[in-house]
Image: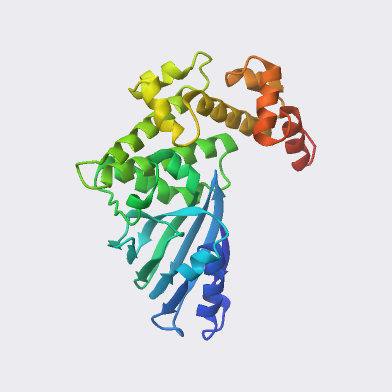
Length: 323
């Protein structure tokens, strides 16, 4: 994690204004008002982990407001998965209001207004997750915002603990491991959200969210199996192929297209991994279930715009070409 801002070296009269300008850029655009400008303290650390950005920030007591004016000028489409490290925040979005305390997890949609009130010495971890990544797991997210997930159930405690651990892992894992951990973290978030919404009686949408999660998990666990097909994945998820594909169709994919997309992603990670730079392209492709090299090269180029061999060569060049 890299510190992008700290009030420690800023004159007291400028601390809040400097912090606000950085927070609007690195977290989300908003208006805010501190409880005390002259005593305001804050720090922002950022880092990349898999497909999402981590933002870890500490701040003094303040109020924030994210309005339609800010949404109109939004330049990215991310969802904000929030884990409170210390202190508390009162959050309101979509007519729901929660008090967000140490260990709790919730998420906000920056394409809709929200308000927040931060306690003194508040410390928060935010995962800026591509909208498509979370919606691929739980479907449309309007009913999931500002749902309070407390680390009481074993599943929720595991999810909360893993999120808290992520900042210490930034830059310390190889790309494949990082991608796997990132996917598992989002899977756990999705499972907790699906189990939390509307208490013990989940709606149909929550049931579909769990099916999506089961399908994805079944595919991820078997990607290296050359016999993996639609029937095997559906059986492992406990649903029929037809039902699985009907749910995946809402996300413009199918079981076989999802299997291919995940295998291509694993191949790309391996081709860019310095620890695997000695391996032949064909060897990597075989390990992830591709047996026709012409078909593999064609699919890879369609997905990423370059051939597998070019991807490996560019990765070596970026590392200095000394391998």
